Image 1 (cartoon, one colour):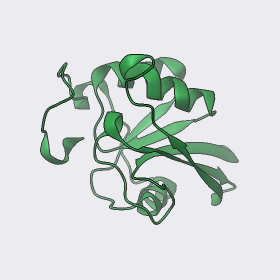
Image 2 (image 1 turned 120 degrees about the vertical axis):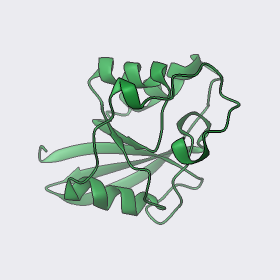
Image 3 (image 1 turned 90 degrees about the vertical axis):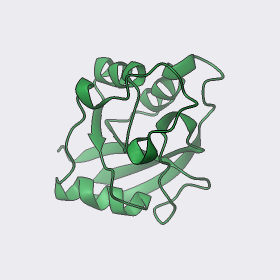
Image 4 (image 1 turned 180 degrees about the vertical axis):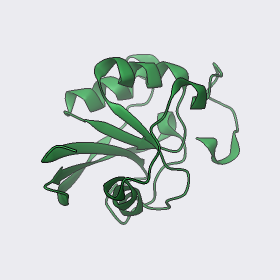
Length: 135
């Protein structure tokens, strides 16, 4: 990890370290963007998610890459946005356990989150589906 890393976590509004993570990447209220400097949280901010309104499944990818995100932590993600992040050089980590944004950040800093691969992606085309805790 470099001296400065920017990570994003799909979040329930208003999106802060103590707020709940969103279980579904594409339908999250927004993303809590956390700047890590020298292994500690330097700042956090919330970016509202416009969902699929502009750019379809890749809209959140564009939003987060524009914000300088180096990594994203999700519980589940579809194949198209996963490929978009990978193509943009953004690492995608899986956390299906943490309840809050802060817990996910702590797990990231501890190095306990596995990196997502294409096999872990949802793979289904629809967004009105139920995969339990997968998304």
